[in-house]
Each structure stands twice: as C-alpha cells, then as structure tokens.
Image 1 (spheres, rainbow, N blue to C red):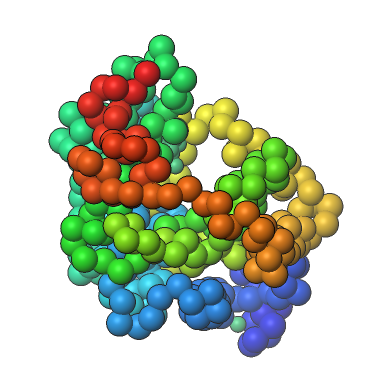
Image 2: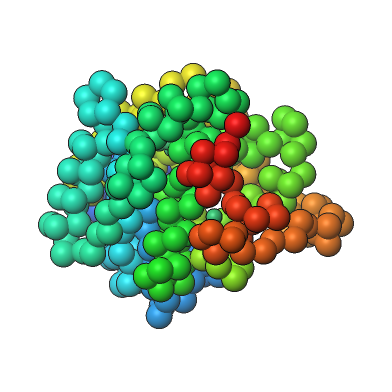
Length: 307
Ligand code: Q46
Ligand code: ZN
Ligand code: ZN
C-alpha cells in the first residue's frame, strides 16, 4: 500500500476515506483535519482560552498535542479520581500526563477529587452501594462538576475533551436504541455554553479510534493503555464491539451513522421539542446551573442527601 501524497510506504490505510498515508503525511493530515473540524463546527476561535480534559489516555493527550501544534492557547486539566485497582490506574495516568506537559512546557492543572469532595471515586461508589448509582454515573457527575468549576474559576472559554468517533457512535447507538430524545438533541461536537457553564467541544469526534491510536503511536506519545477498571462490562464497550462488527462488513458505517445523525439534527429533526427544555437556575451552594429547585446533584451527593 502506497501513501497517496508521496508514493512512499503507507503506515495507515483508511478505506472509509479511500486514503492511505505514510507516517509523515498522516502526522500532518490529523492536525489539518482537526483544524477543519474546529472551524466547520465553530468550536472556538484563535484567541480563546481552552481547557483540555486530560486523562493520560491516547485521545486526550493527542488532542492536547494537536491543539498545541495548531497554535492554540490550550492548558490541561487532570482529575485525580483515586482509582487504584490493579496497577494503580490513577497514579500511572497522572505521571504520564505530567511528563507529557513537562516535556512540552505546557500548563497542567491537577485536581484531586478526594481533596475536593472528601472521598475518592471508589469510596463514593462504596458509600452509594445501596443506592442506584453506578461508579461511572457518580464519577461522571464529579468529573463534569469539577471540569466546569475549574473552567469557570480560571476563566477558560471552552472545555475540550478527547472523545473520538467510536465513543460518539457508541453513545449515539445507546441513545438511539431507547430513542432518548433529550440526549440525542444534546449530542454533538459542540455543546454551547450557558451562564455558569463553559462551552464543551469534541475536536476529535470524526476520527476513528484506530486513527487516534495510530496518531499517538506514530507521534511517540506515551499514554496509559489500560482502561479504567470500572469500565469493564460497560454497555458502551459492548456497543463499540457491535459497531466494529458492522464496520468490518461495511467500512465507513460508523462515520456515516454519526455524520448523518449530525445532519438530521442540524436540519431540525429533533427541534420541535426545543422550547420545552427545562429551566436552569444556579445551585444554591456552588452556583452551577441545575434544574433542581435548590442544590445540584453534585452538591446533594456531597451533602450526603443522595439516596
Ligand atoms: S474514569 Fe470514571 Fe470513566 Fe472509570 S469510573 Fe467510569 S467514568 S470508566 S471515562
Ligand atoms: Zn507520504
Ligand atoms: Zn451545586
């Protein structure tokens, strides 16, 4: 297989794009495409301050690398969740993130969830064992709250996450299976900011997972390979496997599934319920927007009122 640009030996073949590229041209192509997506979906402008949520995994570190190369003002935020099963997942991912930032002279904010909330994620999970909350929903709640808090307190315009196409297609698949209108209307490359909440963007949402793995490896980014131990058995992983089977039979199926959804959303397919969006007001404790009458779900959890 030959590189379409220079005729040299291709390092990656992307049948869905009818494109094969050598290492050098692939490493150019990914940032170029990212810049195109940032512009197409109006994610942010050249002067905005970006906070990149970094986990030590290939996607978020690659995203930070790409934004830095494209010349954006992008700082990192690492949330230490205190997940220490197996090989001490949290401390290894933190070390890799710190190393990445130090080697490139980038600014990294580190927030320790235990210091902020009094407990690690596994401890919160243990505490809520009798409740209905699963580790990932508690963890998601804490992560969203902390990312918003840091973005607001430190004056960032936009919060960027490393979700790739496989992540987005899997979430879309899950939401479509139950026709969850509220979630479907909100899924997309950009979630606009509202007062008290930073805009959220996903600049890698059109790259396949294997493209991001290739990018991190070819770029020489050291990242944590292990999945979070709580991810085992998650529906999102099962959906990814199903979509991979589909992709094997029909290359490009995942991309078409996601892009046609975005097009349907853009042309108003989900629009008619827009006006009935719930009203948000500031949480009486932390000030972040919530639909609850007083405390947001995060503050309810912290104040132990969560059943
Ligand atoms: S870190 Fe947290 Fe994820 Fe681990 S506990 Fe679940 S949500 S899987 S992205
Ligand atoms: Zn080439
Ligand atoms: Zn609150």
